[in-house]
Image 1 (tube, rainbow, N blue to C red):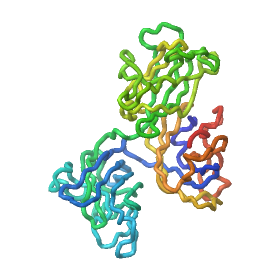
Image 2 (cartoon, helix red, strand yellow; image 1 turned 90 degrees about the vertical axis):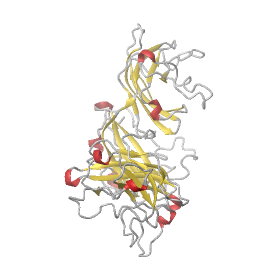
Image 3 (cartoon, helix red, strand yellow; image 1 turned 135 degrees about the vertical axis):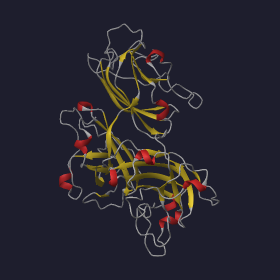
Image 4 (tube, helix red, strand yellow; image 1 turned 90 degrees about the horizontal axis):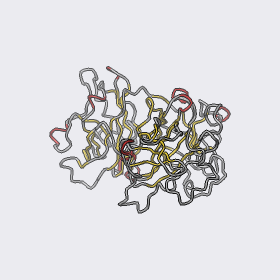
Length: 436
């Protein structure tokens, strides 16, 4: 929770730290005029008739920028199994990377939207999809991926096609090898089950049948750290003030709990939601809140719960708050709480004055959740070249260790202007301290 909107964050500096807390990379956050929510390719199959050894997996997001004759698509992709030859120079000496010259081989290392709507029949996939009535040259011809070790992650330049997301929906996305052959195909759909957009529960009401005097308000946000693991952050008012740091709740089932339940309505919330086929013990039993005053104020961040379910499975479930006796006192439904279009980082540079060997690359999007004093940012990132000791090093007490933070400044070329973490001055503490 920063208290700033996405418009406030636009143009600020995103800084990556190493395990010592040193600033090692910087990039500016830039807004894009995206028309509607993105489309997705969630899975790929081998292109009909392709008999080679490459087997592509991963996902692609397809977003629209601009309208009318300027309508464009931007592809954000994370793929494995692509052609590793697409990381070397071709016969002209040019590298194939984000539309760089690719010599005389048509479609070499390409990743393109095609006309067809069916990946099972090569005869129907068709050619590149764009409005040829207003676009003179094929805009997809220079759109390529770069794949050291058969892995490709990146965001393409804007591809001016003159077509909208509604026209792209249902089309096919084709990946090519270094010879220009079509090797994989995926259908472009409206939703993606594995997309890790955070969920939010904020419209709490009294649990059905509860007649006590507690009236819980606030919000709970649920993200996903890795597959099968949810991460909770919450800020509540009106929870049970007896759930304080001295409460003796040993052995009291669900006392002071804050849990995702299996039900899709508060009238039928059911039990704790986890996959008991893969998770042997109820992971929610130990998840609790602690109030700090007589008003029932409670908050926490980055509470990890291994449920065995994906975030898509959790979407629409019930969030239940319990009192000190374990009784259910409040309930709300979990849904995506994203506000507006994301900001993006497409390229990092070394932080001014940093002389170490780390060279961070990759991409990032920043979404807004909530509004007003509850405005928050959610970061989604795919990075290479970050500090490999982050994850194994003991960073206890090390300020900014392995951090990834929005800073006040709007210029990455001058260390004196990057400034500190960016959040509203009326917040009690720096919300970026625990983000790593």
